Length: 340
Image 1 (tube, helix red, strand yellow):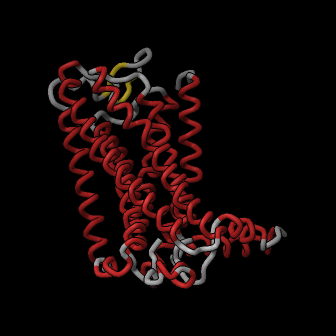
Image 2 (image 1 turned 60 degrees about the vertical axis):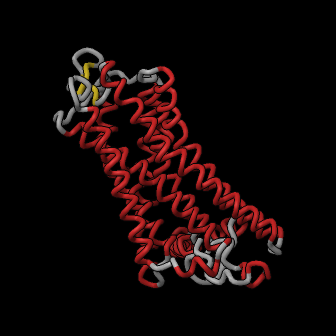
Image 3 (image 1 turned 60 degrees about the horizontal axis):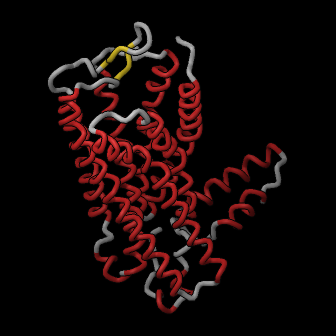
């Protein structure tokens, strides 16, 4: 163990918070969505299950990064360095893709409620998820194979003293080949998904503005869209910006490690998106709170009341702010099962 620098302390704090909050929140969300999958399989339930799996895998291997930060060096065998990083970045970019699929599903269910029902088969959604997993795994594995060409010094490079750090040093020849691949990764798995996600939520905003929903319900639905989009940008933009900066500088930028921290935090911020988009999860948490309050003396209505003031509650399962539009808005009367 070495004396931790301020950045190490801050990184370790982010890792600990992510592990402490991300593990239970994703486990609870996954259990709820698996139960809903048996009750009524829908595309967005399937996308959210895959998002939970992706974030859960990310959290599961996070202790490896925590140990490296605490000890100031890579303590596992060298062969585990590329394996860990493939899993690490695969789960990050898989989360990006499933958030995008979720946003597009929401938009299609609102903008094309009748046509979209034809393609809402769980079989199609599972096929989409399989393609997304294979796409991101293939991309990440290929990039790390390219990184492994030539000198292997970058796998576990010298750090402070005799310490060694995983993936911290590249030759200029490796960077000349690697930097364009990183840019392609940023374009394919961030900029393109960001464009689709932004388009989808702008479309949701437009449909909301045209609807006859009460102003309070509109604000709640807009909040659900906004928090999803903001989380997407805040968590994943910094690290992908480092890829674009590397193209300009033709080298590794010095702030890549800091830029990766918001992506780490996404593992526990994504469940907040779940809370905004699934009343099934809201109801399950409220039910657990009520059961706990019987033993703690906390007013059992406090959590449901606070949540109701922020996100609208609807009867039934897997509903979100847009799900009652068919009964309140003639222009959206065909959206009877909007799958938010």
